[in-house]
Image (tube, rainbow, N blue to C red; front, top):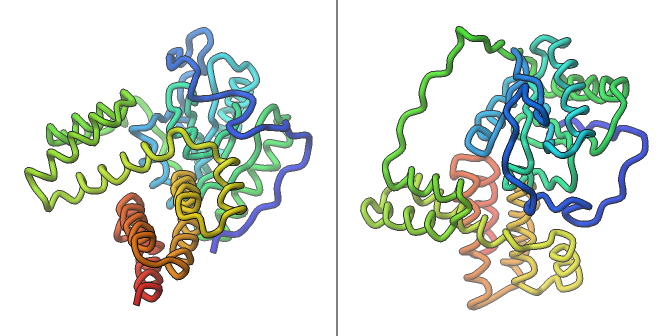
Length: 313
């Protein structure tokens, strides 16, 4: 179990759901690193991340701590916090990696972190997000927060160091995707979910055993179901109506999108025990869909499959 860290002290902004800033409605252009309105260029222990490379950062968090800062070009506070974090990352020389994400250009990643404003700073340890702070934060307090992150990482056996990236360390080109998978990926990048769905469905018609297409289709379904949901409203509805299947399904979707996978699975397994007939089948099918999103080999999926079988039989 991940060691819990105490929350940093100090004033925090009061935020409504999705925050004072609607991240999804902002411009999507990121100034190039080193240009006016942008950040300094990446360094050995600082990387710029987008939706396509986000999974690599999450995977890297199993080896060493990752600190994510969600920023925006229009927010001077966020660029200042990002610069402070970059300086501290270089000082620590590989004890952790700073991943900078432009929230405007990557709204789906921002939604995955449930970011309500910029800057939002989150640690990722072994794939698990640990919220750190939002808004302006003095560098000395940031240092104290990072020390807590490093202590939590060590307590959980995450003690690797970041391999510095330099000009000689050019990454190998990624293998090309099959045409239909590439079409789906491009459609998701363009926020055209119907086109992405159609591409994955065609891939499955051509090869019903295409596990990646099946998982991609499930992920598109999750993005489509949650794109217009309001987190606070959904949670209130689920709490007020515990037997409302639609309300419980909506919160489970949001939990998976936000990384609260075990909460989502537990909610739906409990709902299975309280439903019957068509409602029960809807809950079972949603669990199966979310298993595809998370991945069949994930231990949380393995445990939830056992719990689902117990609830059904």
